[in-house]
Every structure is written in structure tokens, then in C-alpha cells.
Image 1: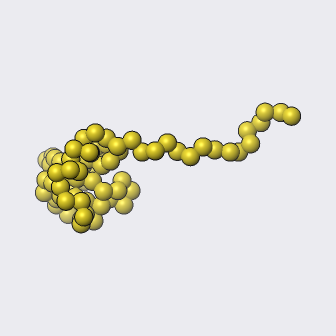
Image 2 (image 1 turned 120 degrees about the vertical axis):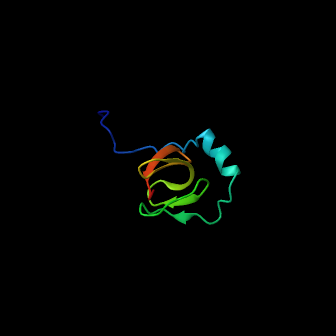
Amino acid sequence: MDNKNTGTWAPPPPLKKDPMWEEASREVNMDNPVPYLPTQAYPLGTVIAHPKFGTGIVRGLKPGGKIIVIFPDGIRKLIAKA
């Protein structure tokens, strides 16, 4: 019998939550996230629902229409209305 790959696979490892997410998510109400739209403006502390990245919290605003959002798996820069 040869040792060819049988096509089996292991499930992906569990998502490791960013420690900053744990801290940030304790500080806000996560019950009603706002749907993310690049054409909207978001104040600091807004909880958003991103279609790809999931629920996140706006932690920073950058000039030129960017927001810094922390998600369970890390920080991302997103486009938003300035």
C-alpha cells in the first residue's frame, strides 16, 4: 500500500482573538452593530458589522476617509466617508 494523500483534511484551528479585541469589546454595547458602508461616516466607538470581517469597533479616524477598526482577529483600515 502506498502512502498517497487520501484527501482527508483537518478542520481549521479555532480563531485566536486579538487581546486588544477582548479589551475593546468590554467597553461597548455589541448588541446593535451598524452595517458597514464605505459611503458612511463612523464616530469613534461605533460598532460595525462588516460583510467579510464580522463585527468590529471603530478605534481611530485617519485623514482621507479611513477608519481604524478592531475585529476579533486583528486591526484593519477601512474606507469611510470623511
